[in-house]
Structure formats: structure tokens, C-alpha cells
Length: 167
Image 1: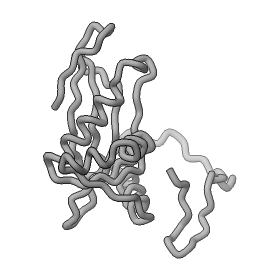
Image 2: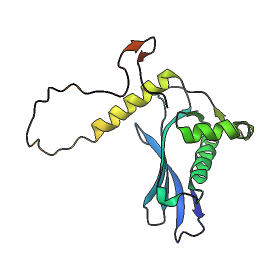
Image 3: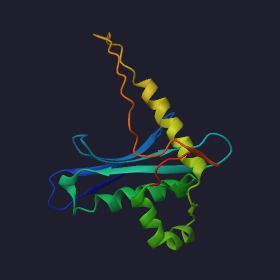
């Protein structure tokens, strides 16, 4: 966990790693524990020691304070310390590794390009996390909707399975 004081912000911030069964995250929080940024990742089951980063979100109120760099720095440091390879599906981390990948590798880190299986794994993890959040509230009224939903991507299959949007 990293703690930093940010200029022009009254509170310090902490960056910490939260490992969970399905979707884990590295989060930036103010001293009062309010979340201001997060990078979500999945650790694939099995022998591989990887972290597949697929989503990063930062609070717009903190633009210009360097919190993205702080978050990425903690991600890289913890991946080196834990000997995890990074798989960058998230544009923020992918851009950082594109610009500074050689430096990351020279410090002992490793990363690889994303594969279609990574997207399938993230989809399964998201579904699993969603099932864990099912509400116990009773259903007030059931409705029958006969409208077919329109998806922003094709569900036709190719050699890799259903088509998903690339990130």
C-alpha cells in the first residue's frame, strides 16, 4: 500500500490492492476512505501468475493531481513484487506499457498482449460477481417483455466464440 500527499488537496491518498475471488482491484482512496479511482483486474485460475487489467476509472474532480500515475505505479510495483505478468486490456495501462514497457521489464516486470481467452475469462468473472450481488428483496411485479434487446456487438460466432467489442 502506498500513501501520498497531493498538492492542493487537503487529504492524503492511499493506494491499495484488494484481491477478491472473481474481480480484484487496485484502488486510490482519500484519507476519509472515499474512493477516487480504481483499476479492476482478474487473476486467472491455474498455474499462470497473471493479472488481466480490464477497467480503470478515476474521479474527474481529481484530474491533474497525478493520481493515475500513482495508481499505475502501485499496479506495476505490486506486480513485480508478486511476480505477476500484466495483461493490459485497460487503455490506461496499455498506454503506459506502450510508452514505458522496456523500463518496467528492466525492473523485473513482465507483460503480454491480450488474447481472446482473456476477454472470455473477464466475462465469466463479471457474471460470477453479478450473481454474488443478487438482492434478497422480493419481486414486486413480474412483467413479460417481448422486445428483443439490441446489443452493441454481434453475437455471431467466429473461431474464437461470440464476438465481443475490443477494448
